[in-house]
Structures are given as structure tokens and as C-alpha cells.
Length: 109
Image (cartoon, rainbow, N blue to C red; front, side, top):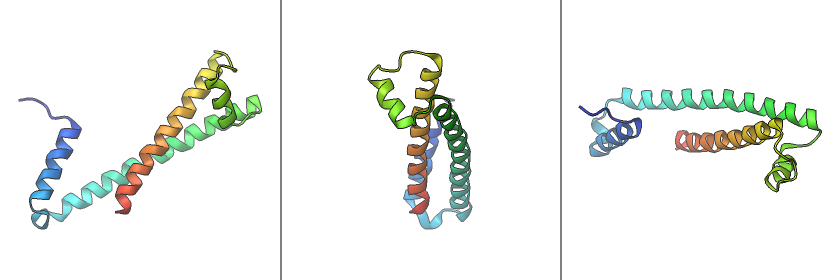
């Protein structure tokens, strides 16, 4: 039997709930809420760690990350390993913030 991906499982659960949401065990809703809150908590911890790393780069190079990213993307900063890591960290933080927005939108509904 083929293993289902997480997304396939979520879609199957969505279909199950959509079929008759009144008949769905409330424990399912509580479990989903708990999983989402757990993921939000995990992402918030990661966000804090990434923000701390960005602050360290900003202190070291006396430049805010926004200015750095603009200059880095235009090729002004070069390919120093610190700069590659700084750019990657800023991108990861942006992605985490976007994922948090998605989860928080869902948890606010």
C-alpha cells in the first residue's frame, strides 16, 4: 500500500469533515488546534533565533538587514561567506514570518 503524504492526509481529513462536520468527533478539532499551536510555537522559537542571528550580523557590520539585503541583491556586497549566510538568514526569517501569518490566519478563523 502506498504511503500517504501529509498533504494527502490533510486533504482526506478535509473531505471527511466536509462530508458531515456535525458528526465529527470534537477531539479531531482539538487535535488540529493543538497541532497548529504547537507549530506556531516552534516557528516563533525559530523566528527568535533567526532574528538574534540577524542582530549579530547587523552589529558586526554596522548595517541593518534591510539595507544589507538591498545592497547584497544588487551585487554591492560581494560573496563573503558571512554575507551569504546573512542573506540566507534574512530569507529564512521572511519565510518563517509568512508561514506564521498563514497559521495565525487559520487559528483566528
